[in-house]
Amino acid sequence: MKCEKCGKHSQGTFIPTPDLIHEGKIVCDHCGAWRTWVKKPENENKRGKASKYKPWLDYCQICLREKSRLGLNETLHIHHLMPVSRGGNDDKENILIVCTYCHQEIHSRQTYLNDHFPKEEK
Image (cartoon, rainbow, N blue to C red; front, side, top):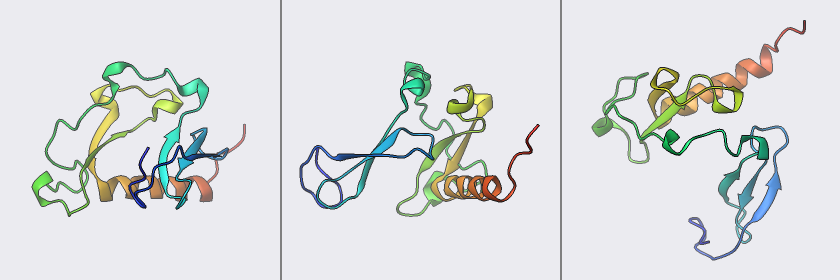
């Protein structure tokens, strides 16, 4: 596998990520750049073959920018309102089409809220 950052070929190194929803990540052996996520075994078969939707709209549903008005390194993404890892599905009712910036903002705010407003224990 060729690293996009340094251009060298390597298998990559697995690094566990116990605090995240993924089992771990694979990084380049040479430069340490992230290459891919590794799913937890219990999440391996949660998605069907048709689950990797391509955006069916040509604009972000948050900021309303059209695809043609996105920045150089921006694109449209699929965002699950209820994550698949927590029982969400790939139905259109559970999906938003968002630009790269808005997608990062959504996850940033979720992380902030989860860190600062923990769930009440019953």
